[in-house]
Image: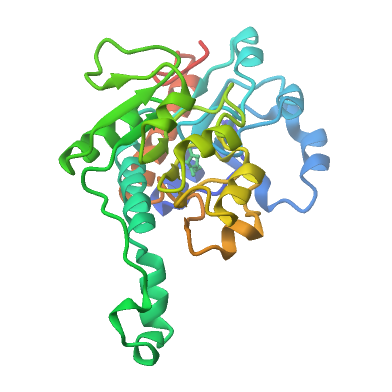
Length: 318
Ligand code: 8YV
């Protein structure tokens, strides 16, 4: 019996997941093809399933070249790079790895915030580059800012937002949040507008889906956050107007930022790369062995379910 054909748009970093994919399916690694579009034009009609990453998603034009497709399995939780309405109309399941990465993303959010307000990366460079020996006086690095007790404004109170709140509560941080609506099962204070949340917070942590929230963190929000305020983004780069953020960082309009995601990855504006106020990561919030293994298993399960003609348990569209 011929194996189902899987088109893989992004690498998976867990060897056992790749082994299982290869054992069960004929896997075409799009990201390694010399001429992907030409391959797609020749072979797209035979593809049964797509595996992609959250940030990569799949272009609508590519979906239109895959008439036999039975599932798009996103190896991630963000589906903003997939046209869900189109997939719904095609009764095409789009699955995500719901719940698998919550803890790791929340861990990194707290880590980035502590790193930004305690100048951990500046201190690391200071020691690593031998500057401590050159400038041994205690004032060579400016005093930092306390994290415990900071007023935290969480933008997007989904799984990750809630996990950030749990962690921050253990640090004695008063927590408020904004979202499309107040949530009955969340005890923290709801603030209807992002501007008001920024005004009343020492740090904003972005945990929201980016489906319809492009550029919500703009100059006005950064201004409201103020010169003692920090921004953390572990969601999607395009939630932020990056030009406004670069200007605010450069001018000291906010105190600092911890960023895991950017508008045009892997390109990061020079102003953000050169500033001592920023702590930067290369979209790594879910990048642990534990989480990526759990995500990979969910992708395998979703493929198996869809290709057996069942509705995948993690489908968002069917
Ligand atoms: C991953 C992500 O980096 O879950 C998401 O939406 O962006 C990240 O977890 C990516 O999906 C890995 O494939």
